[in-house]
Length: 275
Image (cartoon, rainbow, N blue to C red; front, top):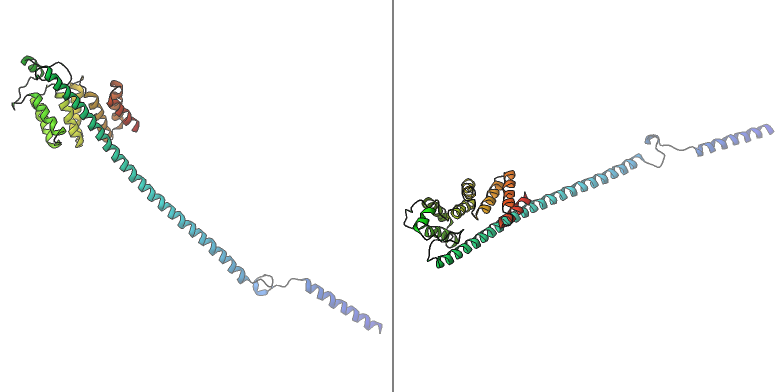
């Protein structure tokens, strides 16, 4: 009787040990590829897809924002370029107004001085660069070796041409008027101014080659003329606008070196700093 009891106890112990071992071992779902029971592979894949979707949306949003910012930057750059162009146009217009005003002041001063000398010298022709009136026929012939063909004296002819600029502002008519004056009075006391005025009129029409010819005449033929520094300055401006910056620098520096105290020197310094 003891033997069956011992066998029963042994069998119970064996069953108990087997149950304990089975309870401690993890349970796997065969269809889940070694995934622990209670954790579905489909749920994991879905979570991963959601995370990828979120990341894709973040990247797309960031890319769209970068494109929008780049578009705004491009727009602002275009507006800045337009503003720079407008400032440059206004600056050029202001420079023209200042140059025009300065020339008018100089011309008015010279004409006032001429009128004063004419009153003192009994209306004798007066040089714009000398206070000595030309009163004798021999002196007049020394100034101009060519007789006028229109019956006008050189002062009247010159004033008529100047008045087309100062009074009536008929600039197109002023060009042939000065050309006619220089044809009649090539060695006139007013010739330097006439060449300069003609160069300025051609300059305003951007006829660079013809304007340069007139300014060069002032520089080479009338070295003592008060218009010479302005003529040098205008040649520098023409070179600058034609894209020849080296020549422009040379001419501007020549104005500064030869006429350091002139108004043309200040303008040359300003333009030289902008090159």
